[in-house]
Length: 127
Image (cartoon, rainbow, N blue to C red; front, side, top):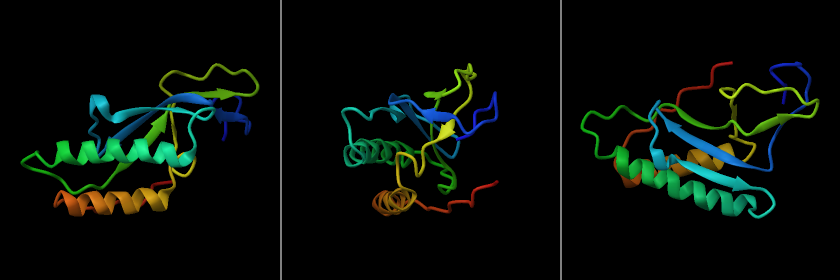
């Protein structure tokens, strides 16, 4: 990934950190989860993520005027530049396809939407 400071392809996700889940601009305090590449493989990480998504859908299903699920963000601030650049604290990178496979994510969203009788209308990514 490209570092926002030196603009070199030297930015990496740290081996440990926190992933934030935001759906339609809404987030729960419990919508964050930890990752540790040294102790957790991608299957275990997806299991933890699945629980967070299910908790979110359960919570969001109680809203009276629900918008269809259109935007899902998974991001982390836990990055570092190989060249030692100081990365701004508010800089974050998407972990979709880095930590969580996009196809598995979309299938999970569809599954949870059916379970909680919600609508999914994922908007295409803007470049």
